[in-house]
Image 1 (spheres, rainbow over the protein chains, first blue to last red):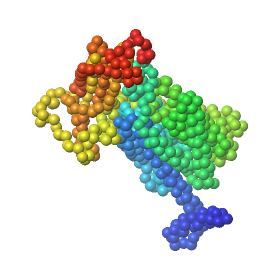
Image 2 (image 1 turned 120 degrees about the vertical axis):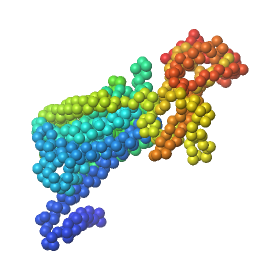
Image 3 (image 1 turned 90 degrees about the horizontal axis):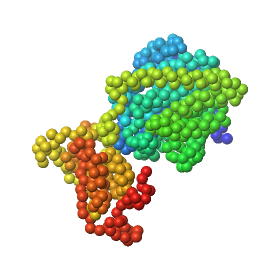
Image 4 (image 1 turned 135 degrees about the vertical axis):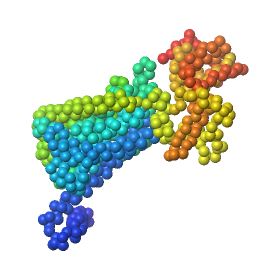
Amino acid sequence: MLRTVLGRALPAGLLALIILPAAAFGQSEALDVNTAVPKAIDELNTVWILVATMLVFFMQAGFALLEIGFSRAKNAGMGIAKILVNFSIASLAWWAVGFAIAFGGGGWLVGDSGFLFQFGRDVAGEAATGGTAAFFIFQFMFAAVSLAIVWGTSLERMKFAAYLPFAIVFSAVIYPLIAHWGFGGGLFAEIGSGVQDFAGSSVVHLTGATAALAALLLLGPRRGKYGPDGSPRAIPGHNMPLFGLGVLILWLGWFGFNGGSTLGTADNRFAEVVAVTNLGAAGGVIGAMVMTRVLQKTLDIGMIGNGAIAGLVAITAPSGYVEFWAAPIIGVVGGVIVVAGVLFFERMRLDDPVGALSAHGLAGIWGTLACGLFTSERLAEAVGVGEPGLFYGGGFQQLGVQAAAVALTFAAVFALSMVTLLAIKATIGLRVPEADEDAGLDISEHGMYGYPEQFIPTAELEGYGYANVPRSLDHIAPGAYAAREEVHTA
Amino acid sequence: MKMIVAYIRHEAFEPIRTELLELGFPSLTVTDVKGSGRQRGITERYRGAELTNYLRPKIKIECVVDDGDLAVIVDTILKHGRTGAVGDGKVFVLPVEEAYRVRTGESGVDILQAHPDSNGAFAK
């Protein structure tokens, strides 16, 4: 009883709180319901978009922990530098160029307004407002997620310097191009009656994974991943709890990722989307758990975690288009695909330390196609894109549209990424020297260890109660060491 | 009977181990150790301050063999352990007085290593 009273009273009270200050700052006119209510609704939409933005930002922490957990201890620190620098470069590139290409109106290929985004400037024919800023920062988080996915395959062997130019090109051109096609009213809106990709199974996840494949093909496997006879060997990550925390943070962030893609609170659609998202993730975990038990005769922790990611990636495109019953099915299939995919890529000699190709690539393709099967009439109409799927009597029409989007995304991203990475390989180089890879990127590229106590003998760690060792050995044999320059300094 | 104590680079261990298995010498003990020699240290820079680290990680291999097998083991270690750079390590050979197998109480040279002709279970 109390609950229902509160349930009715609270929203009304909140609305009043939002309206009253807005009215107080008005030009001392009487409270005008006709303008104040739409304004309050607009502001409420912005609040939800910004909450979702922050959830999606937190996914960067999820990616960092997931990758660090799956790396060896000698490469644990670099993940932090990598995520921070890539995110920051992408922030500037998106502001200067990316947002305009993605959402600046224009034709089917690219947007053409909103470069160097500013308040009041023209974006797609309208002056930018605070609401546009919310959209700008929300969409940037998607670009940053896509970029973080790219580097999943490159762990433990890539040069830090090579990240920088690719981050600029990817977040200024490659991702924005696909985002324009998928989200910005470009090419994908003109295939059939529109491609259904609610939050970006293709636009964000397949895009990231495709660039990751290009990077992996040019990088090659980590040293020691394949024995002299070519048989794959495990290179276990150093911290499964960190990996697991990363997965859970990503799961949390995904509620903003999919839920926020409603771009507002109208009809409480965002709550439906969040519930569907959770069902998809749960399905992914269960699918992967069964699959790893059947194929590997064990309950592989990494595979179960990858199952959660795959379920989430798979439900990303359908999250706004499918009814609750379909979500766990889509997730389970995603979880099954990710386990089979990881084992498949392993056999193909593609050394993907975190399973990004499977979790984001294969599950992203599946999620995009799943719309063509499960999209319901009610939701196709509510979102206003595409036709109902095969199981709702829509035939194969929408499935074909979805497949076209997958093929176009893969082809465009693969070609552009390959060209960019080849240029980087020819100039800066992509891979660290072998000695640096053996020593670990933390000490060789960053000059410090992620876990110093584990690598520096306690006897030499000052501040631990041990005697100081000499700063230089030259007093023992002056000049003796200068002549013997060490090849293996790292 | 001789004990071989070798200090080698981490990368050298796997080829040495593989060849010793193929030759029929599966019995050895491996320890992660840290030590210093002529190889230079590593300087860690931690937010502006330096910490130089002269003790470098190595792998220590110990194994006990019949006098007649000594040369082949040492040669294997030298062959795979050598990069030509300072820091490849050292090999020491020590005399051993007696050896016992705990499980049976047997003693003497027969308990040391399984020979290739005894059974092929160790080969990959």
